[in-house]
Each structure stands twice: as C-alpha cells, then as structure tokens.
Image (cartoon, rainbow, N blue to C red; front, side):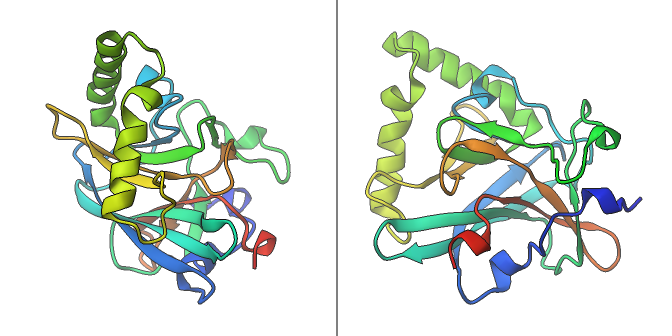
Amino acid sequence: MYIKKLEPSMDLNEYFSDNNFKILKLGNLNVTSGEIIVSDPLYSLPYGGTDKFTKKVRKGSFPVIVAVFEDKKNGPVYMASKLCFSKAEPVKFQLALKNNEDYNKLNENEIYGYPVETGLASFCDASAQADYAQFCSDLKKKYRNPNIYETYFARAFEENGKNNPKWQRPEGDWLNFKIPNSKGNIVMMNSGIGNGVYPSYWGYDEDGEICCLITPFVSPAEIV
C-alpha cells in the first residue's frame, strides 16, 4: 500500500545519479534473515537497542554504496548510503518503519529515524545483532574499557583508511566489519555531518518491488 505521507521531501535518486556526487563502493552486506537494521553501530547496536524494520527483503549478499561530495577543504562528505537489493531504478520511496512506529501519529514534516551519537551509521542483518553484541561485550571485558571505539574500532577504521584511501580521511570513514565467529557482517560509514536523527527509505521499482534502502545524511541543498 502506497502512503503519500511517507514520501521523502526530495527525489532520493539525486544522490546517486547527480554528477555532483561520487559513488563509493563499501562491499556487500550478508542478508541471512531478510530483516534489516539501520543504526549507530557503536551507540545502540551493541546493546540491542535498535529494532528491525517491519518489511522483509530477499536473502542474499547485496552491495552497499555511499554518495560522496568532494569537499576540497574539509575532506569527503558522505551524503547518503544505499543498500542495493537489485539493479532496478527506484521510482518511488517510502519511509521505513519499525514495529513501534505509527505513521498516523506523524505531523507534517515529521519523520521516524534512528539516533546517531558517535558520527557513524550502519546496515546490519537482524540475525547478526546478537553475535555483534556478544563480540562488543567480550571486547569490554578483555580490555576492561567500556569504550569499544578506543579499544578496537579506531584501529580498524584507520587500517581500512590506509588500505582503501579513496574518499576517506586518514582516520577512516567506513568499515565493512566481519563479525568474528559469525556469518554476519556490518557495513559502517560516516554519517555525513555527524550526530542527529536519520530516517531511512525503501525504494520501489516499477513493479512495486523493494529494490533498495537509502539513508540520506545531508541535503544536497546544504552543500552544492
């Protein structure tokens, strides 16, 4: 069912088809349950505080890309992230909802989104969340430090930045993280201009099938 109220305020295809932005490939996300979580991977995901979306997608391994603005002075700006379930071009978009979110309660120009508190966003299959939570718990016990970024992820991001320097700062801006002792992975990326609340949108093709999931971080109007 198409709901006008859940449309984004702009055509999200602009992020990935406009010549103003570059497309950066972050590798694939393994989708084993068909249920997707988007979240801050260091703030809520390790503690099970992020719900999955109500809609399910097909299982498989799907590419994740980001639209990047090349800021010559301040470095790359990640404008939006996209999880691609097919090569089809989306023709309409709808706000992605979780079980506890009622669109009838939204006022005009209001959205549901997820909080970012560490400047990072991510895509994750719901089946991988428990394994990731256990990994983070083990890290805190091993290093006796509650800050998992300091103890592990800072080094991992920096190493990825060195190995894949294109459109990354020296400290790293993205990481396709394979969870140890798990089939799951989490694709993490810089959340544009930092902390905030970010919505996500399902993209539908001409046949009404879900072809992508997009999280916009920065409005093109703010930067171009």
